[in-house]
Amino acid sequence: MPERDPAIAPPFDQGVFLLHYNRGREAFQEARYAEARRELENAQRMRPDDADVLNLLGLVYFKTNAFPEAEVIYRRLALENPNVFILHSNLGLILFKQGKLDESEQFLLRAIDLRPNYAKSHLYLGLLYRQRRKYGLALEHLRFAGADKIVREVEAEMRPAGAPPPPPPAPAPPRRDTQKITQKIVPLTDGRTAQVKPMVTQPGGIPMPADAARVVDTAHTAARKLQDAVDETQLAEEKRLDLGKKIEGASKTFTLHENGFLEINFGRSVHVKRGTVSSYSGNLKFVAESGLLGTTAQTLVKAVGQGKIFVYEKGRKTFLLDLNEEFIYVEGSNLLALEDTLTYRVEPIYDSTYQRKIDTVKIFGKGSLAISTHIEPLTLRVTKEYPLSISSSALVAWTGNVIPTVMDDKSLENVMIENAGDAGFKIRFEGDGVVVSEQ
Image (cartoon, rainbow, N blue to C red):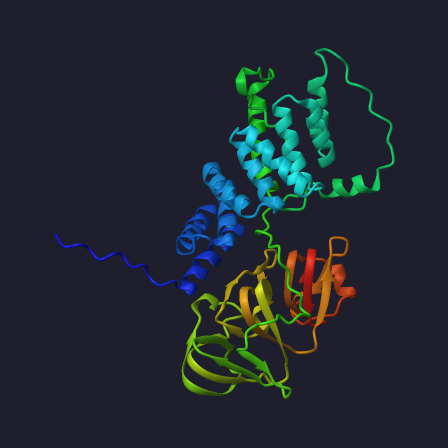
């Protein structure tokens, strides 16, 4: 019997990959978890080691109570990223949900070592110790997390049967640091504070309270609210881009001339903005990128072949950035050119209230890109103490461990620059990073 030819893997299609990833991301944000799981699993089959896909797929598994599948992913992510606290915290919660208390405790303690003031890790560990009836440790962590309701419940469990409750303590002025922590504990998606009820499944034959049916129902409610409390930020990258730095040995593909022309020399392919090519030489073919259709970045086309292109965008300023295994998010309409050594995907910022979005493109790897703006942009620092708010139309790019959220605050219209058709559409950046703005 003749030997069969070995199977040949089909070539990787970035456009199809991005299609699955973006569909899965959008479905996840809209709580269509079955669809999100299907799309993200398709994306993972195409790129099995993509950290962003794995992180989001792990959250989908968690939301759908597929805890063993979520555990596999988060074990891998935590192993590959030993210093990212949120991965250890999430894995600890996933293990806790499955009753694997010893391992859960280890990962939650590691998360607290990495980020001592992260309230959710203390909340999860406090619930774990409560289930183990280690009330002293439970109270310590629950108080740190600001979970006052659960603290009162644990204190009631510790009192002997029939003993009257202690009188309420005299109010004391809150400490400044404690007040900050309390304000941030367990945010829900609608801005409220989670009233997380106890996990009361009793292992080892420990008696349950008399009103067991009500307590079990309470536990189910607690499980749902704990899921809402999971931090849904994407895997935090450790590297940050210094926008004022030129990388030694960076790509020589792009050259910016004093007259504003961008010269691109390439041997395989390059992405350029449609309508900006002044001239080109070589045997080139221009094709649209399917992964960008329907976004503000769909003006990018791919030039395939070997040659030279001169690019010029009238009335706009051009500047170059070199990435060295780093990442940056760029608003799609500001992208002018992109080297083919870089990887990209569209990751919009959604305004669900008004069904709007900002198409930001995440670009990462090693190589060069060109960005164009109407005016000389500002480079603004974001810190934990000083979050940044800007108009949506002013956003050019951002990088670092920051989380953007849409604000619907009409009062800002009285103090911020007005933008036609953009009333009430403001973006707030929190965390640690840099934002590039045109205003």
